[in-house]
Image (tube, rainbow, N blue to C red; front, side, top):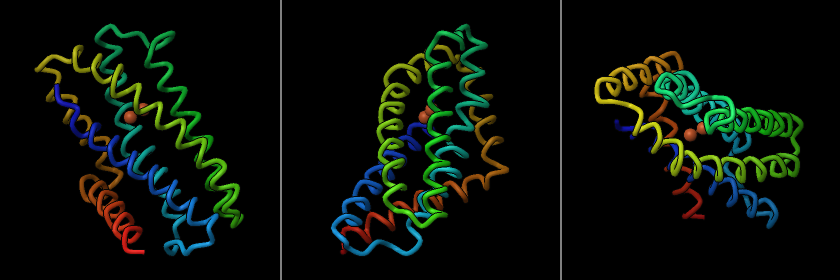
Length: 178
Ligand SMILES: [Fe+2]
Ligand SMILES: [Fe+2]
């Protein structure tokens, strides 16, 4: 079973978290930041991390693992779901800070969000995904990959997903040139 799509998304989320750190540093050094950076960051978290990525885990991967005998309650799936909930709470705080025009509050929640997601991704990369790969047989792999695409479709499918990869590329390039 290949979880390449999810793996790629983890790497992109990590790059986003690095951007967030770099923006925070620039903010406190009173250096310019890209136009609309707070609203774009909130969009990335809501539409990409939560929408495109967590949705595939919650609607496809985790149920598939449960069907293959990996329990939800008291096991790693339950922990991952709870952390997705915590991430949503922090994302809401970041969104409120953006709407209030309060970068300090944004970075306060953003820092916690970064710490949470960093350790969350580490656990998925090293514990949960290897378990999933072990649980998913070849005949299930096709169904899982097809289900991933179905989850992404209403969110804009490949086109929306690629736009976020391009956006991170662009922001990283801009940062390097500043
Ligand atoms: Fe997750
Ligand atoms: Fe994940």
